Figure 1: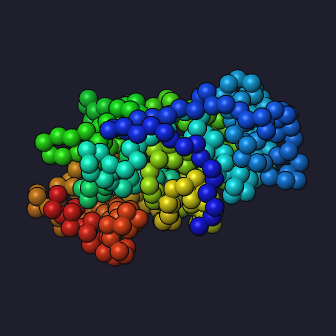
Figure 2: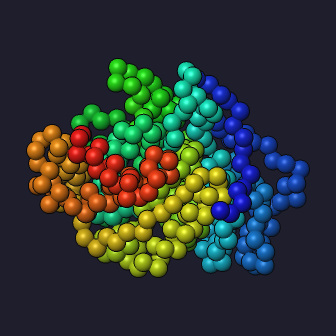
Length: 359
């Protein structure tokens, strides 16, 4: 495991989770001689890597309006051309996290009980990828916290939030504090444990502004910039562990397995350096996942799978949605292993299958 980057310590310990924001973080005397031009020139010349202080300063100044869009665009292009090493990528990820609200979970316990392991999953997506709709409640059924912030569609695919919003009246927008309270609040059936929401505007605001510039400057394809954009939103949740589903094939955004492997390795390194136990599955996606395409149709398919045991339609669902069920069980198993609920992947798959069939 690589050495971890220093991160801002959270100091608030409450009976419920809260958020911290670094929008007013102080810049240390070490940064007094930093200039936007100097940072850009250093990455352009690529003689030596950026320090974490340089990257944190540049992102902070960008959010304060002291680094202009054209300067950020120049830096992004320099990164796209010259790349970033593991430490630089992780430092950029953490700087983007610290640009907004960060989940600040209770350190040890709530009402005398230890806080459950917090685990999340991210998929690079593809046609018919609806895994999260089944995975989040399935893993939460083991008593784990699943704080899943999901996105909308990219390109030709529908995002998890788009699918959920096809349900009339379904609410996906929550503030970070509301999100935490939703997960930890008690009810007649116990804590909810799992929830899928759309990130609030205060989560990783630097990513939103930087992505808009990447989109119009042809720098979207940079592995370092892809990694920091994806991982910053996941790390802002401050999970204990994270499982990545990095896809390749005709139905995904990366056709070649080599590109997906490179992205997976980069994201694992960034997660580990930021203090999050991270693993990845690289999975083939040449066809539609499951049997349905279209937001509401995909929601209905997931409901059918989650209720197949009670409805007596298990053989039919397995036949129609075999690939979807297999990848969901495998991801759930890896999440259970990382949370120490299962000793092996095979044991985790069996445990997840039992819960899925029992409803």
